[in-house]
Length: 124
Image 1: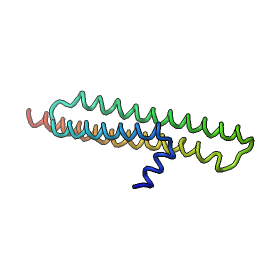
Image 2: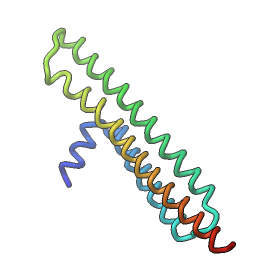
Image 3: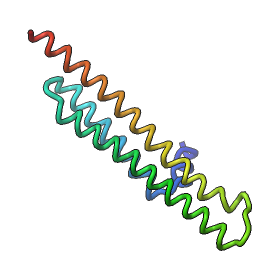
Image 4: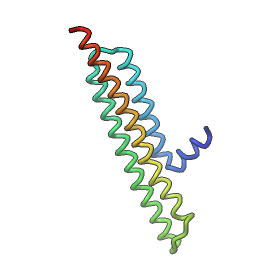
């Protein structure tokens, strides 16, 4: 578990931890929608919006990671692997995390949509 938090810190805590918070919010909304099983259009819309924001936040983190990498190279005057590693980790980890949260959210949306359709069919 400490390895997980190390990776989050390598990706830049300013970008990775909010994405984890978005994931927790998405899971809470999914559970609320699953328990409610009624009209979940607002919950589905909110989950989709948060998921897209997580992706955008991850790619914003990638941009900052690349800027850090290029700043390190400019400051050192030469290209060495350790200089690039810090920025490239941030550039890779944040979009990966954002896309992972997005995929989890989309799976939740699919499940809620299927449940909603089942409930409508039962009523009819």
